[in-house]
Image (tube, rainbow, N blue to C red; front, side, top):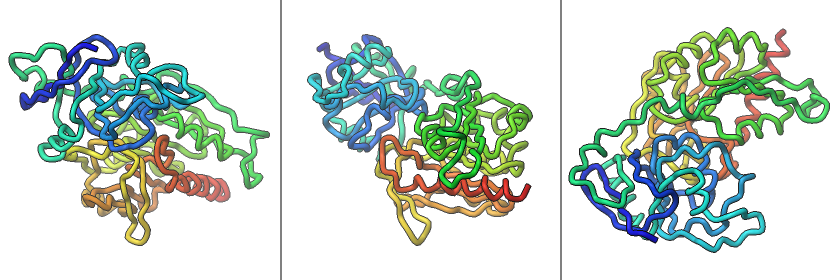
Length: 362
């Protein structure tokens, strides 16, 4: 292995060994606290434009399992304490190092990931570069910005998925048709809908409200995705036309875009929430959730139109909203998990119930 460096935008340098693709790359550095699920993390499109740092010390021990991928690998880099080059799993089809090379993702191992994570917690999210030569100035690193993230990660074509069985759900009713708007959707969102007997049409991120409604959906799912939510002006405008027409369930970026469509505001968090052990509460119960986001909705900016249904038990930030009289709710965390706990998967059942109630009114 060759010597390589992680250079932060503040000029701090961490020396390690190069893994993955032999290239230099700048990205927004974020740390994730998941103890498992590194494949799902690497293939989560929400990491587009970012360098991922794993706080768990040993990564790659169960190899690469394509069946576990959640989407395309759009990360700008990958940093770990120790990389396992001899994976042990009967499902493994290769090493993580080979996967990173195949996806043209540069990486670094042998660095003090705890120290780096501590810097980000103290100073906030920073840009960083993975390189083999320390730059004379970190100015180019500081100037990096993630732009066009949803355009890069979002779906590009309409795809239909039939309901399982004989188009019936578990309660014996005809399958409900859900339109899933793909801003960079994780595959398990689709799986959770299909498992509940839904017929699903996945549409590109830039599909108009008129085109979506022409598909005659019983409900609309707004997916997760990467980047600054305020950048997606056109997508926000479409949600404004959709909300209140049919039941809507938004996850992660879908949660943020819905808030902006309803006149709310978002803010960038100091270092975001990334990992499978994030606690959220409704004041009565607390759930452990999977999360991956740098931005949060300011619930007080929507006090006239929505009620905060969940908030983060660590920092109090908004984790969910119910929109009054709009038949819509959204959450910041990932109820479909993968990887992570399944504590909040019941929210898909709530969405199913909303569609059944709407259908009964017809």
